[in-house]
Image (cartoon, rainbow, N blue to C red; front, side, top):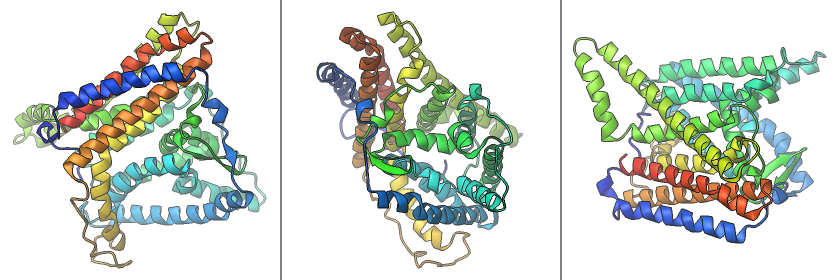
Length: 452
């Protein structure tokens, strides 16, 4: 994403020596592991996952009229963003689409999902279009049925592939902020999303194939709010992560979530930049298009390697955990949800400064979405505060997010362990590989951030 540089600068910008941050993170995780073993002897998350129901009137308004209004606005905004990308100024800094897609949507929706629950069901323009189509057909006396039955063995693999395609556009393509490129990408994704819903049904495709619906749905498991049977419920945070996740492709999807962010951070280090310079420099004059292609392919390979490393580390921890207690089956489905708080932590840690700084540009761009000199809402002259967060404050937020995310991951994994292992010692021993995994993920994240 070439909108603005983000991260914390160089390692020399750290407020204290880097090794203190590393050791501090390790100490926090080890102490958390000990306290969990001593103070969390039985399952707690599942017992509180249902939460308590909020008022009937509130649920009816939010899930009824308010949802319809929200869906209508989401389709209108979607049309505006796509029109901006297709017809607006080709300068990404004068066009609404790049900032809205890469900053407001891509970075804002995860936070909104964690705070308010699975609001993407109401904010998704593709779901809104599909709902409107079904409503019109049913009012005409025609039952809207899926065209085919979804192969359950595919699970979330289609969503993992489409999410990988999106991050590949963002991180590997030479000009990801080009409005015209985004217009084509939005059109292509829209076709896939609507075709999937028509072919397999809205609920099925959102659950398995629509990458953003799967992403925000998984993050919404962290939220204190959720809806069940037409009623909004309030629950303790993290309780939605109770239980196993046996849908095929979930590990791959979560690995893309984590691995893509790790690669984004690593791609900004001097090590990667120097390597890409060596790849491209021989062709800069004679064959620039070839040099650009090689850099794109190298970046694609880098993303794939990062995703595979994340997945391999998780599978390795599960294998060691199983061997340590002689478990009769694979533990891979049982602990994958413990990585979801870490995925959120990576997003916050890597993109907090980008969101706070570049996000402010959405206000003037909304008044002039096509870059034509308009002032539709009177915000065209808003001047963003580029020093809204200091480098030191950014680093402390990043560090705190990584530490909190990994501690939350440990807690979720521990709760699952005491659920499936009756023997307390086995539950504790089974978590030693996951402690090592959390330490590895934390140190890797901190190392990338410190050199971004």
